[in-house]
Length: 137
Image (cartoon, rainbow, N blue to C red; front, side, top):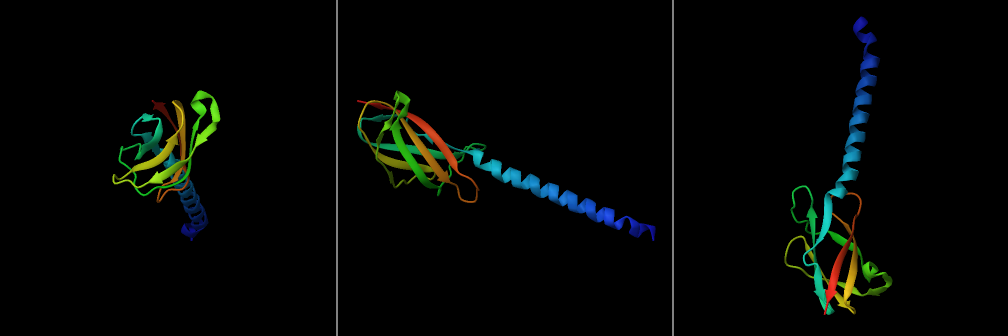
């Protein structure tokens, strides 16, 4: 009979352990989006019609991340204090996994900022990045 007296306490303990474990897993999933980053393939582009190549990588192992959905993109001259000086940017096809290409009309020499937002398949959250590049003559 005494063995049954501990059953409610044992059940409560198991429930507490399972809740704590699932909270830890949920926190780990949210933090995983920070394991990804965008990198410029080239930090300089020529003034005029330019192709900008970026790479999306998993930071822990350096592997490229293909098939991300890039939904936010902006190119402006914020590094030179001209945030309102922006230009059009258009996605282009790429043959290399994890490399994303964009066509842009670079109207001036100087510093440009590429702002990106992307969803990675299987992850919650958004990868966001601001990359700096230099336009040359």
